[in-house]
Length: 275
Image (cartoon, rainbow, N blue to C red; front, side, top):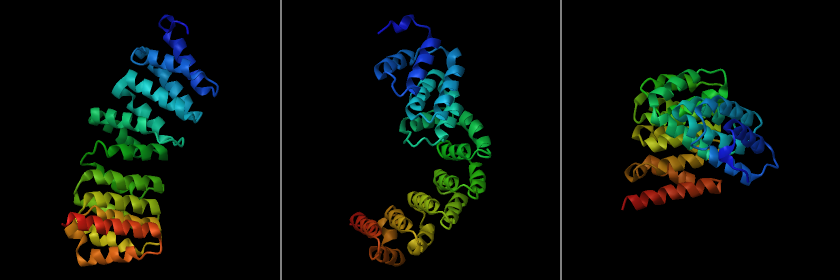
């Protein structure tokens, strides 16, 4: 292998990208180039790297996106957040665990700067960017966000409404946030109702129990299972109350095995906690 230290970084960066986009690229060679550039790439090459990352996303190359995003975060730090979030927003079919961690860490390192990017994006005509911004707001919440989330709760894109439910959970016991989560229990989209149930389960507000329990009759078995999952997160004393216990008993007789399993787990968990 050649002496990488003697090569021009522009050439190396372009070689790295070409190899990442080539199905027959030499992984050992690419790994060596990536390792060499990490922590040493000149900052004047950041715009070139950003353009390469955009090309990788347009080519729907998940591996290239991951490698180049890591290199960009290492080189540009917090200033790379907008570009990284734009790249993250595009669904390429992978779990994006590494990129997700990078983005949340960068946002939390400088919440004020992150919010300056995110708040305008919540009104973007690009649904992917709206979804990404509303999701990341949950990691850098501010008191004005509930009004933003209230508007987004009516977004025509159900993926965005689903994200809103989760982000509302970052606002603790704020009555307006809790009311919005409850309202999303009536959303026509199954996944939105599930996200709202999950958020309400984590918040464990006793006043929301009747609203959660009403979904015992939901047409979706997944939603009914999530009723049990949400109830399982409440204190044993709340689950032991007669109306809630009756709901769990009904779920334990559900036609769907998964629903019955979740209801049984909720009842047994409450019994253990109540000892």
